[in-house]
Image (tube, rainbow, N blue to C red; front, side, top):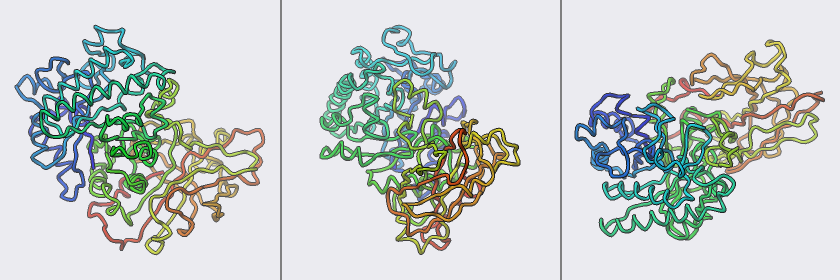
Length: 538
């Protein structure tokens, strides 16, 4: 189980004011203080890729967030690596390949590195006008980035080096030509591999090469990442796949890398999260990771788990994640929520408009429209990683929840809707163009689970604890027979029946969730208090 630790955001010394050893001790206690923690690898991310987090770089300027340490003769990278090794952890150096604009400790997004100022012809636009990225179709850019990676690899004895293509990699090639120009990125990966193999001969031990990419092979093609070629040529040892995605096509990556020995590790981002599920309850994490383990990955990775910043008691939740989610055995018979992926969110649609895939979830099923005439149901796949039918005797409650939005209800009096609020807040980035439907919605909904009709639903409410305690989220709940739930993909069908909606805007399905509550006497209950009291989902 890997933790990608973004030191620039989660523990920046300017924000913290600690000395290096106190700073490290604080963070090691958070993710290794629990004796049951399943974390065994730290991927050290030293903020954005245009600044050196160590002294004496011949390629990069010093990152201002670490300058007070570096000016005092402290090398934060070496000390972090040494102390991490003393704790028996595997260590990766994670490099954000195409984000050289700085976010912490400087003037903000408009700040550029000296190389960017000197070579503006190497740059191309991103979705933000003030944020430029490098064009890897230019050989000099590839040589420059190789030099940065070589310096870090030769200076520090990390077990592996991760190239984080998630960080600006989707813009690394010209829009509209990325797959056509994919060989430029493959040649770059080839040059990095040659360099790490030379370093292996010097060290007389392996240097793992890791690439962090999107959640499916097809999406990687849209960004110019030819992961099949990378695997076939032996250019990577590990693919860390996913991002803002709850759904990760591990089986697809396994097929694309078959016979190569490349390891597949899905990762979760709890800050730039899947739309509607930023800092969710522990039950959502469990459902997500159970689905991943059902595809038999070689490990799992967590990212942006900065619980002290969360206003909802998140640290206990993260400790549970790190003690439970690293193995299917420790997830067994624990309460879970399985959800259907939503598209876009947090700038995702703007990224997609530029032709990128990473971070968009553009292939997701939701939102999905309901036909006004009710002639045909709207069907979505709901993946369930627990063998619910087999464990039926252990299940106390099994509920399907639907969150719906009806634009035609926007002008109704508050008392005529199932909830008075004119919008539904999803997470840290509230979406305000969603509208609770009119009262009586449960009477016109026909819902099936794998083709079996569910009994009439009921309106219920949940709350969000991410800065939205005063918002009550309405949903329609349906009881489900455990025997109807298959391990893997299930089909949920939703249809409007007997509703006169001619000429009205179509209603949409915004969320589909299956909530499983196991009996309290199941084995393996975590002594960490459940987050049900602290984090409730909509």
